[in-house]
Each structure stands twice: as structure tokens, then as C-alpha cells.
Length: 200
Image (cartoon, rainbow, N blue to C red):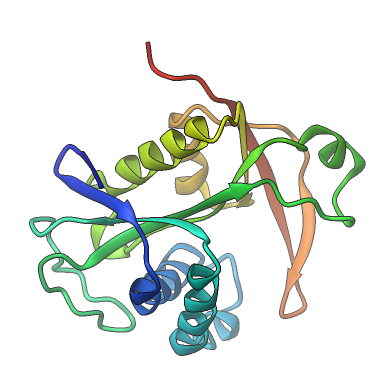
């Protein structure tokens, strides 16, 4: 367990699966409104995602969660998550960079040996309160401890707040955009990356 400012960060357990799924759904509906079709966002299922997260955590997935009893929780969420002290306020999932046969050749040749942030979400009610920064620090420390020297992630094109956050974390757009679809909707994701170094 670590503390970054007032935010407590710890490794997630299978018992956190439902809370992680709730944040996942709430953040998608908040962050991707206007970018992803409303029908897709409305159809997100917390229970299904919780089951998937429980399975991944049982299998050893590396997920860090942030908690803080004093961060204000006065913004209501789509799923009306409990706002008791100590609840989860955000999470980040990290591991080896996933290699896809459908990826551009430049990506396949560039990313072996990299770490990847698979998902990074802060509950809408707790954004801009230091949770994201604390989770980033935990993920960065884990990557360095595992010996990674480069980190990449995919971010939805048009998600300006996320892109700006990652830029503040030192990542840059590699201009290796990739097309994909969600429920037949064509979308574009950007590959952002940075070299990892320990603070002096």
C-alpha cells in the first residue's frame, strides 16, 4: 500500500471486482459521451463486467485501486455507487504490452518488451482531485520494479481530457493511429508512449 498526497493506493483483490466494474461503466458513460454511441453506453452491464474482472483478478491481473475517505463524492453516478468512506475512486490495470496480429507492422516491431496500461479510469465524481496522479505513480513504480523501460497505451481519439492527462505524465502521441469498431461503430485509437526512468 502506498500514499500519494492524500490518496491511498493498493493492489486490487477479487473482492474489488464489483467496485472496479462500477467505475468502469460510470467512467465510460461520462468520458465517452459524444464519442461512443449512446446505445452502446446504455447497454453496459456492471454485473457482466464484475464477473470478468473477478476472473482476471483471480488469475493475477495487476490492478491498482485508489481510495480516500475525504475526497468529495457529491456528484451522483449513473449506477449510484455507495459513497461510504474508503470506497474505490479509481483504478489502473497494467502488464506486458499486448501483441495483436491486426496491429500495424510499425506497432508490432516497436512494442515487444514494453509495458502497457490496459485501462485507467477515475470515477466521474472524483476526477481532478489527485486520484489519477496517485494511480499513475503506482503503475509507473510497478513497471520500473518489473524492469520495463518503455510504456505504451491506447487512447480513444477525441478523448481530449485523457490525452492531456497522459501528456502531463510524459507520454507522447506516436502517430500510429489504429482503427477499430465497437458495436459496428468505427473508431480510432491513438498509441501514446514514453520511456520510463526513476525520479532522480
